[in-house]
Length: 399
Image 1 (cartoon, one colour):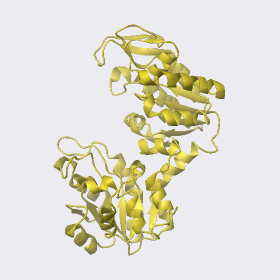
Image 2: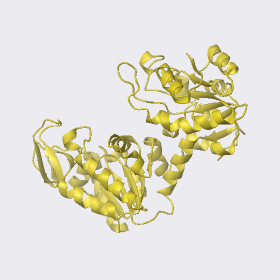
Image 3: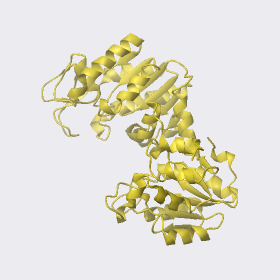
Image 4: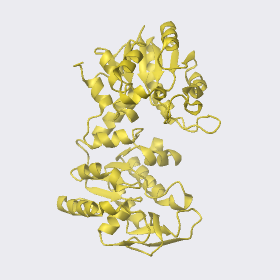
């Protein structure tokens, strides 16, 4: 697979798939520009080589065509500020205006195309739509790892029109290198921390990790399915009833493989799903009726921190509780602090996208862990052993 450093963009127009799916407030101001900042080195490399950049991305989930709140025009001023160069905007990602602006693009300039998902053909992976996008550039760069698990026109199909001129950008390259680092030749002890609401979202990765890790720490809403499978009473805590038997099987599998699978010994519980609810702490296996576990408790925090402190490789995906509510964010913060501390002593730590990445960024720890993935679902699928269409499209030359 060719990387961006193996290509000279002088005199070329690079069609770059980025992930600019950034949150906007009611006035269309960007509230978190991490994804834009992540793509800066790739864009800058092309400009520095003497190339021109044509950016394409999705934003949000538009239903039936153009919607102003999902328009990429809201990002133009941020890009002008970042690159201090001409940034043009095409009101459609295909068609006469896009063709005209792309044709006139000079080295050092940037053209941002309108939201790809304003066309249903994008998500359908339509070859004709992909061909029209491909006609705008001389070389294709995929730097959108977060969408690499989708076989969309701009992430997979478009690559077939660039048999000899397709590369991965720095974001994609870093994501793949860091994912491989927690899958192959890891330094031990290796600890995986799995949180979030549902066990069903993590089944495949948990099964795969049981062949690789020394410790598997469970937190978040999904931990109560494990507690119930382990014979506990969980009050009105979140539970996937149809996954209780599976959780029991995973507990047994961990035991067979010699993996220490840790369920929170205690929990912060509340009598309602609200930051203003009455709060208590109790053993996770003995939660009273009408009460629900919303965070790991103090003993669980201590136990988890001790295991993390002794780890040389750490993978973390998913929060330990409802961290958006301040009263139930303590567990996630404690795990984040433990991961940061272990990293400072030489451990390798990968924060696996989604809510855990948001928590680490929110706490200001992003530069104190080894790598924060922007991948979310793409990272999980890659770690489950699935082929990512956006990656395979760069690797393949059989079109």
